[in-house]
Amino acid sequence: MRVSRFSGLPDNGTPQVSLVTPSYNAAPYLRAAIESVLDQDYPNIDYLVMDGGSTDGTVALLKEFGDKVRWVSAKDGGQADAIARGFEQTTGAILGWLNADDLLKPGAVRAAVESFHANPQAGLIYGNADFIDAGGQTLGPCTVVEPYSRYRLIHYGDYIIQPAAFFSRQAYDEVGGLDTSLHWSMDWDLWIRLSRHYEVLYIEKYLASYRWLGSNKTAEGGFDRLKEVEMVARRYGCNGLPAYFRLELARLLAADARDNLQQRQFVPMLERLARAAATVFGSWHATKSLVNPHIWRNYRTAQTLYRHVEEGAAKHP
Image (cartoon, rainbow, N blue to C red):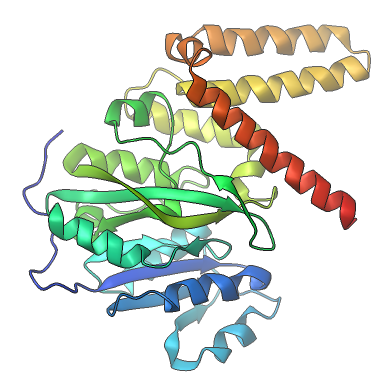
């Protein structure tokens, strides 16, 4: 890793922080996201909502905030395109994005700025986050978060929760910004490229809440998402899917095998089980992960999240 001497922050104590929220038909959650930014105790935030031409009342909601929030509502090329174009319309020395259904914790921006000042060599700073449900109820911590290791970021998986991450504009520009061709992995791809040139700092503070709806883009990505993940991983020298994603693929294959069994399709069932086993045991990293308590904690967290969504659907069919 080539560590840059300086990540581009001005010497004054309150550099501008530019935050972008990409939004499309997310009106039920957007107000809370916006308010979590406006309620920050940091005095120099430039906030821009990039709406993709929503038809669910989003524009009327945005107008309610008057001049407190800048916004654009027009068709875009997807989430990554909206974020990248949003950053082009801002000038802050520190950047971050907050999806329309996520929240910033009180004091998150100030904590990030203070960490950059204390560690001017850092290009990326991230912290902890928790899961919340559709109504804002806390479900528990995002257990996937780990202290920083570039090797584990590439060969095990993305443990950086995106809304809890901030990066310098200099670092972002130097590595070429977001890859707007990516649908699911643009944040992970960016973290890896930033870590190639700049130091990455993990701070043990809760900076954000990730809203788990069961219909999140990541949750619904399935096999297509993992194909993209593998493509990105190979860019950076990983031989196929990273370990944690291999476990995810094995889980999806096992779920398909269960469906095959229920339909008495025994040959497809055996084929999927064999592929699931090969996916895990074909990687030493993935095999070792099976005996790591951290992985089983993550698995229990995922089960809790899916069960919560299912119970909510049963109560409100």
